[in-house]
Amino acid sequence: MRTYWLVISVLAVWRVTHLLTAEDGPWDIIVRIRKKIGNGFWGRLLDCFYCLSLWAAAPFAYLVGESIRERFTLWLALSAGAILLERGTSKEVGPPPYFEDGGQDNAVLRTGEDPTPSDNIRAQD
Image (cartoon, rainbow, N blue to C red; front, side):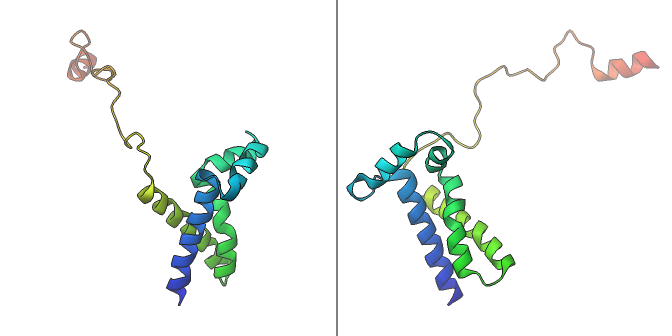
C-alpha cells in the first residue's frame, strides 16, 4: 500500500508543478495569476520547475509520511520523482550536460618557448 501512495504522490507533485509552471490552466486562470504575481520572488518561483517542485512536494510529504524523518525524505524524493518525470516527458531540447565551446585548445598546455618541468628540476640542482 505504501508504494501505491508513493507513486500517486509523485504523479500529483508533477501534475501540480507542471500546471503552475508550464500551462495556462482552465479559463487561463494560471496565466492570469502568473501575470499578476510579476517578476518578484513568487514570479521567479513559478518559472522554475525544480524550485516549485520542492514547494509542491511539501504538503504531499506531510500527508503521506508518518515520522519527521520519513516526511523529510519523502519531501526530497517526491520532488526528485517529479523532476525525473518532467525530464522524461519534456519536449524542450536544451544544451547537453557537457559541451565544448571551441575555445583555445592549448590554454593550459605549455608552449615550446617555456622550459619543461624536467629542465626546471635540473636547473635547481
